[in-house]
Length: 122
Image (cartoon, rainbow, N blue to C red):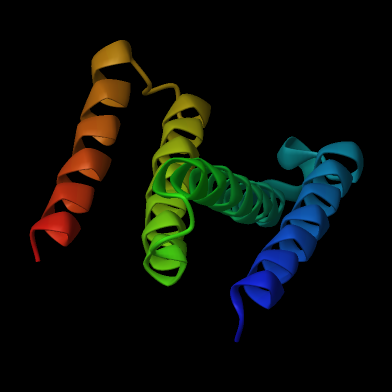
C-alpha cells in the first residue's frame, strides 16, 4: 500500500467517522438509549479523533522531516493518533461519570506519554 492510498483511506474513514459522530449527536439520546447510545458516541468519537490526530501528526512530521522517512512517519503518527484518541475518549468517559478533575486529566495524559516513551525506547 502506498502512502498516498493510506492517506486517502485515512481521510475517507475520518470523514465517515465525523458523519457518524454528527448523526449520533443528532439522533441518539444517551438517557433514553442508555448504554448503546453512549457506546456509539464514544466509538465514533474515538475513530474521528484517531483519524484527525493521525493526519495532523503525519502532516507535521512530513513538514519537518522533508519526506525522508515517510514510511516510518506513518506508523508513528498512527500510534500517536491512537494514544491521543484514547486519552481524549478516556477523559470524556471520566467527565460523563463526573470523575474528571484536572489531576485525573493529567494522569491520563502522563499515562499516554509513558506508553509512547515505552514504544520509542524499543
